[in-house]
Structure formats: structure tokens, C-alpha cells
Length: 420
Image 1 (tube, helix red, strand yellow):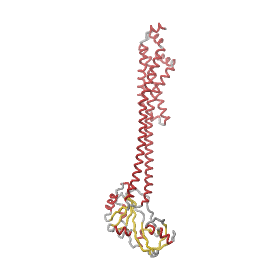
Image 2 (tube, rainbow, N blue to C red; image 1 turned 90 degrees about the vertical axis):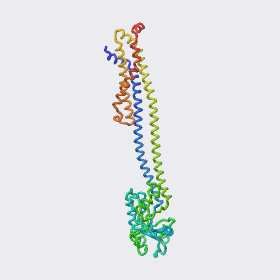
Image 3 (cartoon, rainbow, N blue to C red; image 1 turned 120 degrees about the vertical axis):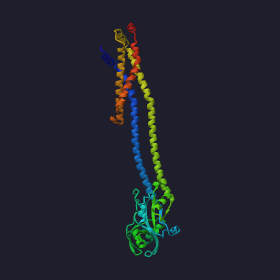
Image 4 (cartoon, one colour; image 1 turned 90 degrees about the horizontal axis):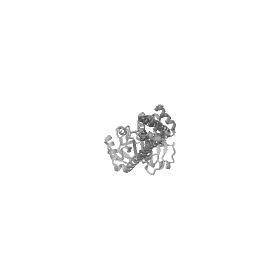
């Protein structure tokens, strides 16, 4: 009988031993590969989750910043641009500037490239005696906001007053019992009431807002304004000196006042804090996932060698049992003149076959686990890894089976047969 035929008959006859060895090798092969694939998949998921979370939190940050922006718009405009020759004491006393500047200064500022301010609002404000209403009022003429040509468009902070209409302050419409749609005369011009303002507890309660062109006409100041209101952009921080220098560079013959610098700083701090908290949350999430990966890596580094060692010992133990069970057969073969190298070949060939079959099944098991975990086979299959596993497993199985094989070939046939 040929050695190959004898080998396969041996495998079939002692199939329990063969299957046990295959299972041990399969576990030894599959465990480190599964751990490695699991770590790789976890890293990919970590990156995907992190990217998705980063995008989502960036969106939340933008939404939060936008909400803060809308909320802080309640502070109102915080930058006031006045004519250079305006006396500030008179301005505070009268609550309006007696000097004027050209209206086209607004367009010049909007196209100057200054990025520290936005929401430019030209205005013409003056306290007058209103003969038709028999009282003193403040006329506030304004057009729509002029956007910064170099900044991202934003929602206007103030709705422009339509030409021919008026927005009336609280005490004026309350005392005169005015309603929306009523017509009023102001310095000889007729205006339709478009809106009645609620009580604000300041000079807005005795103010009438008009379209800027209408206000210029009734005040006899065509093409002139006496103030530009603006809002500092917090994207460049809360440094008001940078705002002032930027505006003065574009408009040298004006003066720049901060309406309330504390509001500017508060606005900057709110949005800076929102950005900082979001970045910290992302960083903490990434660190937590990295720690989980490191823990899994450490566990793999400990458990994989133990499983491989246990499998090798198990294969060696089964091979030794096989030698003991076949000692009479081995002694008979030697007595019949079978060469020692053929008997050694028989045992090592069996070990090699165990290594190849166990490696293939173990690698297939690791791929199956990867697919069940959600990965794609094409992404997991690596021919170089498979060849490496086949070679290493076969060599280790042969090494584990070598001591029993040496014992087998050193068996004295006469002693065995005498015992038999």
C-alpha cells in the first residue's frame, strides 16, 4: 500500500483525532485574524462616525451660532459712525447729529473690504416740532440695510420703511389714537401708518420712522445722512480698536463710536464659547474611541498568543496519542523493512495537511465573521495574508508534531513485537 493511501486511510480511521486537530488550528488561525479585522472595522466605523458627527456638530454649531446671532441682534447695532466735525457732547445732549455726511459713504464703506463690521444702516435722525400733531417728535429716516460686499449675506436686522409710509412710536399712536392705515400729515406730507410700535421705554416711543428719501425731503437734506449704524462682526474677535481703524481707513472724515462695547464682547464670547465646547466634545469623543481600540488591541495581544500556544500543545498532544495508538503498527512497518524517512514523512505529511486545512477553514471562518459584522468580503480578503497564514500554520503544525514523530521513528520494532 502506498504512503499517500495509507495517510488518507489513517485520517479516515482516526477522524475524531483529525477533526479535533483541525478545530484547534482553525481557532488559532481565526482568532487573531478576527481580532485584527474587528479592530480595522472598528477604526473604519470610528472614522465614519467621527466624520458624520463632525459634520453634524458643525451644522449644529452653525445653527447655534445663528441662534446666538439672532438672539444677540436684540442688543441692536453696536457701532455708530458720525461726521468728523460733529460735537459729541451736543450729540449726546440732542440725541442726534447736527452735522451730515454724504449718503454714498455707506456704499463706499460696504465696498471698502472692511470685514470687521456688517449690517450698514444709513440714517437721518432729527428732533422736530410737529405742527400737525402739536408735539415734539423724533424723525428717523432710514433705508434698507446695505450689505457688506465682501461678507456672507445675512438676514437684515431692520425691515426698511416703505416710501410714503410711517412707523409710529408708542406714545404718539396711543395719545393720538392712531390705527394702522390711518393717514397723518408730517411737515406738509401725507403718510400712511404701516406699523404701530410697542412700548420700549425710551425715545423710540416718541419717534416716527420714515423712508430715508422721504425724511431727506421733509427735512430739506437731500442725499445727506447724519449717522451710519453698523454691527461688529465677531468672526474677527471683540477688539473694537480694529473696527475703528478699519472704518477710518475707508472713511477718514468720520468718527467711530462703540454704542456699548460690553455687548460686543459678550457677543464674541458667546459664539467663541459655543465653538470651543463643540470642539471639546468632538475631541473627547475621538479620545474615547481611541481608548476602546487600544483596549481591544491589548486584549488581542494577550489572548492571541495564548490561543496559538494552547492550539499547538493540543495538536502535539493529539499527535503523541496517535503515536502511542499506532506503536504496534509502526513497529511492524519497521520490522517489515519500511524506511525510517518514510515513516517520518507519514507523520509530517499529516501535520502539513492538518496545517493547510486548518488554516483555510480558520481564514474562511474569519471572513464569515467579518461579513456577519457588516464588512464586505472583497474588503477583507487579502491573498498575501492567506499565503502567510498557510506557511506559518503549516510550519508550526510540523514543529508541534515533530517530537511525537521522532519518538515514532526511534521505536524498536523487536521491543514492540515482543510486548505484543
